Length: 165
Image 1 (cartoon, rainbow, N blue to C red):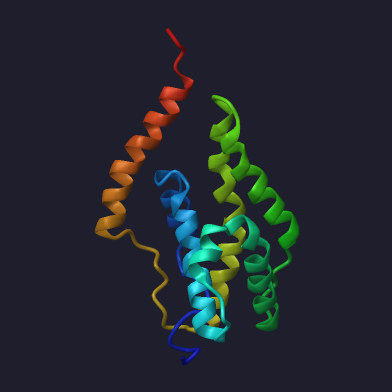
Image 2: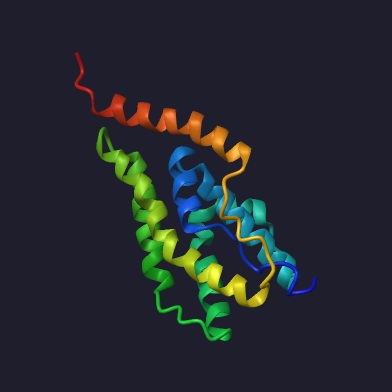
């Protein structure tokens, strides 16, 4: 595959990543991992399964973030973050979903850990494939998801914070 025609990692604006992760109650992050692994596989030809790496993202998070950082450094992009610390923070926040009410709501902050990684991905993609679609607009399906998922997100928060009668 021509490196100039397709980005190596999943292009998405940080704002869209944040919004879609929140309104899908974190499911968009699984999609984010899948798309990153899928594009990485296409670019490198590595014999990996993007599906299983997305499903078991807790196991493969460190590997993906390391690959993104290393690829960025090869391109001269200043990617001064620790894949280990970001993975630890992401896992820690994601695992907060197991906490009792209302503390599990902290798990929604896990997407914040992915934002600096996505910033580097977007920089890397701009260099590697300058004409790629930056995926910074909301499609009709995204808007429907925001309407439905956003309502569920608000209901989950309100339901969790309302006093029991």
